[in-house]
Length: 279
Image (cartoon, rainbow, N blue to C red; front, side, top):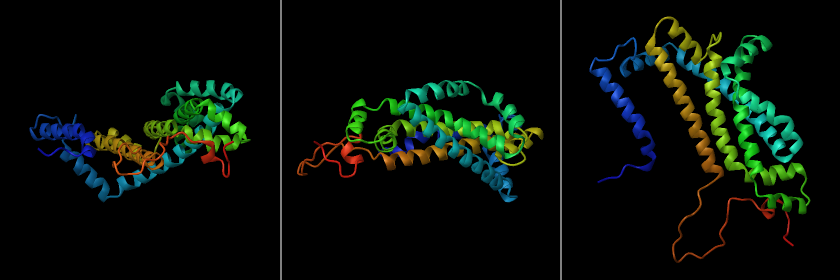
């Protein structure tokens, strides 16, 4: 019996749900006003693509996430490094960000509208805040979890704080940072759904709001599926980045191969300090 390729296995449950949905729709047991059949959703997608509404909405929503999440991840990474390096910075930054993490997006959105007005700024800012907090938490946790001996070696080689952060701590904390990036991008899409539900004239959220107003359940479900697909795409991109930056270790070797010294993912000062020689 042919085994299913490993890459396809994670999709089995999704394919099963879609097949069950299609079967239920074909049987006529589904109320189209409650849960449209897949064919109705595909027809709605075809119509929105034909008139240009869906591509334009995807471009607007994608731009909002790219700008907001990019800014949030950059600031979260910087604050995480500072808080991981300095106890004073941690005391100053950590409590406010922990408080922000506990506040729902729906509570923050009206305040952002009052503070920065309508239009793009509150939407992009909400996405940025949503991406900032997970990135910060993952980075500070990763930096504080680095082997203390690496810090001692960095000090022995005379590395300053900046070079210690960029050449020692950040590479060693990279696995945690990448996990935080995945969480940040997923949270950014959730924040975008909330942001685009408030006075949005463009974007996927605007399509969803109009469809809800006119009881177009097929378009509402299409927008939900589009948000889910966009989240999966960004998650796949981060996974590809993980494989690029952290290639899997070699677990086996041909017996005739020449043995080599085992390596680990933890950086050494010889690898991060040009021209450095061990005593």
